[in-house]
Image (cartoon, rainbow, N blue to C red; front, top):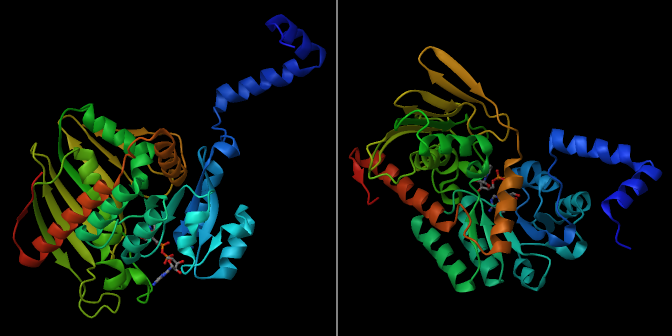
Length: 376
Ligand code: NAD
């Protein structure tokens, strides 16, 4: 029976539910919780590679997703996969090894494959996922070379599936606000952009310090954040690049082709200049924009949480605080919504390719000591 509003009120009053409903409404308006969507409407993700990022960030982030859930795990370590499957409610039928990976094709609960493997493996596992008829979210850097990126984009086209690169900061509220401040010219035209990303890397045996697996040194892994930020803050593509490299001689962490620190400068078509630093030797975590009437910055700028924004105007410093959100949940939800609505993801394969092309130009500029020019 359909209830009229007054009937409904009487019913709530008679059952003592008015108070509960009112207090729930109060909670909703005060905290505005983002409730997860119904399970059947969530798209299924297969997570490929159960290393540090998958275990510590991606799998826990599903609890904050509205449109995504984890339905499969791919790993070379069956025992680890089983333990994580139990913790995250992944059925036994959703467990795969690298040898059985192509059988994802027959799993209707997997819509999107998230590649979280060492950089050199992104190409192969993306192409195989597309061949299995799945959409792909691939971690940054997209691949080790622009040619590999092009092959991944082509595989997505042939399969008629979406390919997105995991640039989590493009879904993070503070970085989005910085982009908005640039585009709306809140403090006049942006003129100079400073982007720094780095950390002091440890274990010399890790894949990040192996040129074949990583594709390079700090630039491929962490400096890419500085490059990508200079591109999204300016909203332009670089037309000229200078670079200096320094790698401490004799440091056992750095083999040939695996650089420690790179300073690079980008010139954009509108005249915006960017100075960027990438390092495996020191901690760097800041994006700063100098506009005509003020400077605004994030520091930390690329951590997983607790980013801080400041606006520096004359002698005053203003802190701007935005609500904390899980970056990986936002990123995975965005991909799921792009699939559901058949829209282009904000960071498609073409975005990864642009970074790879610029990174190759940075390496060339550092090697030759000459300015490298690019088509915008
Ligand atoms: P990790 O070393 O912790 O994990 C890598 C996983 O790949 C491990 O489970 C390992 O067993 C598996 N693997 C399979 N074949 C391998 C091989 N031949 N050599 C080494 N490992 C192999 O690495 P991670 O930190 O999880 O990074 C994985 C990917 O995620 C990289 O592309 C990295 O750039 C990216 N990443 C992105 C972010 C981010 O914030 N978006 C952060 C960290 C890492």
